[in-house]
Image 1 (cartoon, rainbow, N blue to C red):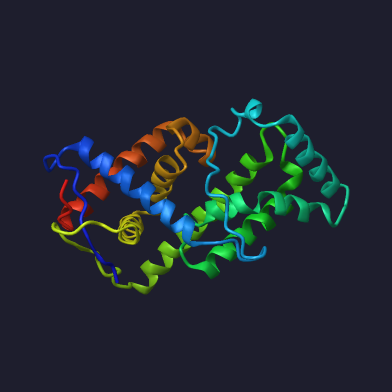
Image 2 (tube, rainbow, N blue to C red):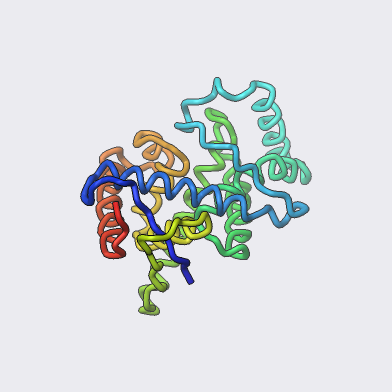
Length: 249
């Protein structure tokens, strides 16, 4: 169940600027909470490195990465392609924390999360020959992770439609109580779950991964126009949900 919460920017209802600030603040606060609450389960229960952020367009940031680190990745990749059975395990160990943290955005079910992370590395393994080394390996891997997470959302959305299940209980929003961190996480997860997979993806990439429209287009291989339209519709729909829940702006 959701706890009692309030979201109040102190500005008039209907202000698009106020609503935008509310969404950004709540999403990032909830994001920090859910990432802190999880850990990487298949590697000694270590926590994922939540300080790492996407560094922009996958083809843009070569200079931002140490040459030595890229050379090491390239050497391990070549070793995998040459048939070294241990080289891919080294790549996984190097990338698992960032991918683990990233995939936590797509589910809060730990078992599902572990499966999604595994799916990313399995798909990457079988696609490794297509990596052209024109961008850091971590960027290429995150593109695959985005596809894996998006496919998961689409499957879940289709299952809900087939089961014709009732929506999850709505959060209780109070105007006289401060919102706790856990309640912020629950509220944001509820709001995002109301969206279609494309809408949810663009908001997640924009607000949590802090990618621009151009960067989202590169990550998803959608046109910038499609990204802009999808983001506009997602914001409008979320605003209606907030108004239905009587969240004060």
